[in-house]
Length: 91
View (tube, rainbow, N blue to C red):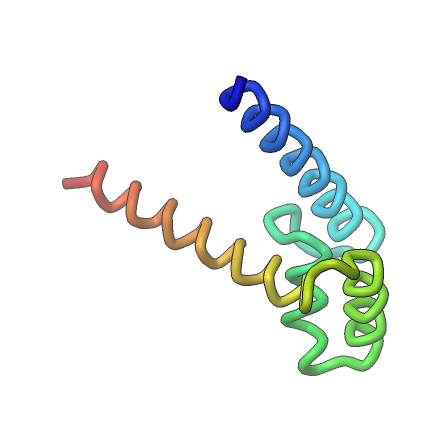
């Protein structure tokens, strides 16, 4: 039963991430490799528009202290994991 719950959780998480990446690419002209949350974290340091978007996103995910920073860190961790796996495959 735990495996089924884990799979359902991952599918839900992946669908939400896919929607966020679609919005980032299609509406905001960003990359499909980056969620809207992670982009608002990065761009928010330079642009007030993205700071506002980040505040809205953090408001939506009110149960997290700083969702946009968490989302950015998740993407960094995922990228590092992918690079380590690719490096291991090339040896």
